[in-house]
Image 1 (tube, each protein chain N blue to C red):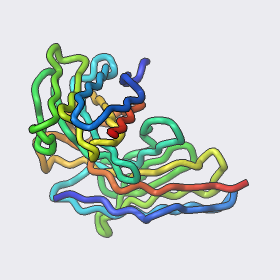
Image 2 (image 1 turned 180 degrees about the horizontal axis):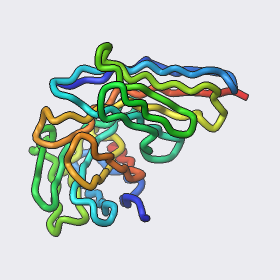
Image 3 (image 1 turned 120 degrees about the vertical axis):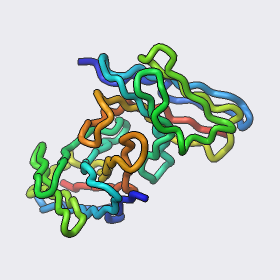
Image 4 (image 1 turned 60 degrees about the vertical axis):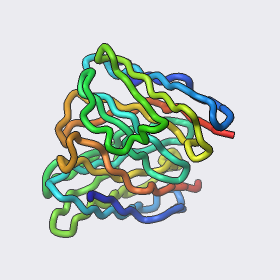
Amino acid sequence: EAGVAQSPRYKIIEKRQSVAFWCNPISGHATLYWYQQILGQGPKLLIQFQNNGVVDDSQLPKDRFSAERLKGVDSTLKIQPAKLEDSAVYLCASSSGTRPTDTQYFGPGTRLTVL
Amino acid sequence: GDSVTQMEGPVTLSEEAFLTINCTYTATGYPSLFWYVQYPGEGLQLLLKATKADDKGSNKGFEATYRKETTSFHLEKGSVQVSDSAVYFCALSDRGNAGNMLTFGGGTRLMVKP
């Protein structure tokens, strides 16, 4: 079974530029998550989707971050404009449901460096 | 809100030593508990989980028991190998928010020397 796919794996941009990350979840998984992992810290949730609807985006900096999952399958996370503090690994995860007992499966992540 | 506290690293052990990584949590509801592992250059992988009190999760020789009375989920392994060198994250999932987001600890780096 294929895992969670993400691209690109690495991205380097200048501050104030824009950037987009793509995620394709495990086939059949209705729930998709984006996490931000700053170096030396644990991941923090940015947004959670159930199919193509947003379940939780309370920690998404909406002035610069946006995310969509238009057809309920793959998803795109965008940052515009980027700041130095956005340098982090952006992790996508998926699960079959939204219960606390449901395991979340993570992709390899996209490492973003903002100069 | 929910939080997870785990021991700071790095933890350095010799091969075949006993491992304990402490994890305690605070949650408003009745959470599920997880240990994830991140090997160098790779993504997060689920190591084990427990979904109710006194459950023991186990995988690859690692074990952790859900202790509701002490709000703990300590990770143990009887004999570590060099290949266990990685960063270990304790996490919980609760119904406190609209979804089932994972709340992670800060991670503990384990280094095993031959």
